[in-house]
Length: 500
Image 1 (cartoon, rainbow, N blue to C red):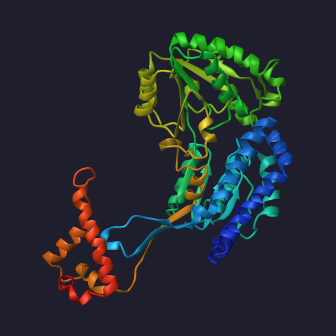
Image 2 (image 1 turned 90 degrees about the vertical axis):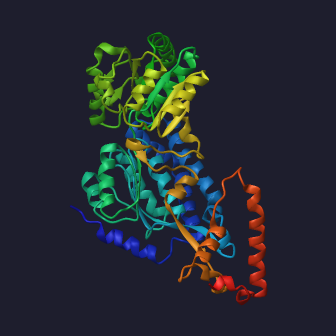
Image 3 (image 1 turned 45 degrees about the horizontal axis):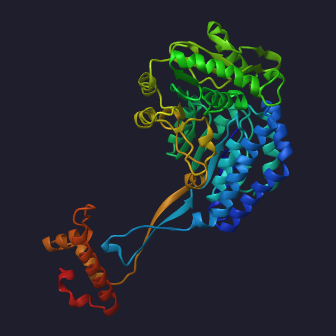
């Protein structure tokens, strides 16, 4: 098995020089990533098409520009994000300086995913660089053309001492995880996520795990079913359903199921007028293994196929497929589908849907279609998920001011926008004091007395808001004035109670 000890140690040595900490270095790296994206747009889109038959629009909007927009926002705000964050102080610390300093962790390992191999690799990469870290980048070998392209391009645009790319499969990833890092950021499935977390626990390395799971949908009665069908089919056919937050299955009443099926047929005809297999707007399964996995699911649910079900092994093609009258015990409900198959499970009402959701693992995303405030409130307040979207699918991922991440089995940690910078930054607590007015400090020194304890409690005790706030204001004002007078006039020895 390969060893990456020398590589990682070299990056640690570079980090300890302080090279990555100044704003100027960070800005230079971000400019490098921006140039990489802008100067190689066509080559990136071509690699994505080779790997996933990804349509040009999806490659540009969901991968290239998605990263670029977040990157530009990071560049525009980096100097402000790097500033120390002032914090509130108590009466005892009025003369001190207290703040949070954003510090880089050190060497970060970023393990990307194959389904969005640019977005899920480049976005954490530049977030880690913005925070001042060295980065060891491991693209997914499943999207091999994109992985090779990143290995070629990254050294041309970024600091080769601080940013490294390692390509390879399970053997290389296993070897990488034997090394010690200061942070690990992994995107992928839950099974491998547990392996990553176990490796990180060896050194108590902090991690972000962007995982997945079965993201449920509930469709209420009295909706605009055509709009629902449009948004469901869009969410399920983007990247041929190979999206971690794709709608995984739908719950609704029997009557709503029939309305949905009629409208889904219409929507599919509008989205792909001739045949999805001939459309430039529809992708493919990434490889034969994933094709066979989803095909097996379709084959074992033949009696439930309402729409689609067509496959072509030579092209890794699976048509958009809708299953009806599915039961929770059916094979399609055993694991995350990660393909263009959408089961519909009839339920009695929203309460039955909620009961099923809360009895299982917490999903990465949850989608509720309803015009009823009571129904929406029930899902909002009675369930837990990484994200909740009402009356649409997947769109929350494009709001850079919202955290993107899971909870429980669907992951830990979050990123996008400033949260990516924060994820790769350690919040260092800093307190700066003067070696003056030592008599004021004496109340905390032994020998302890009842009077000292009383003085400390008076100066530090918190008051509940809305009860005795006004009674606290005079003490605060008096304390502030007293501290100022003591400092200016040097009255330390004229206040004997401070020396007891």
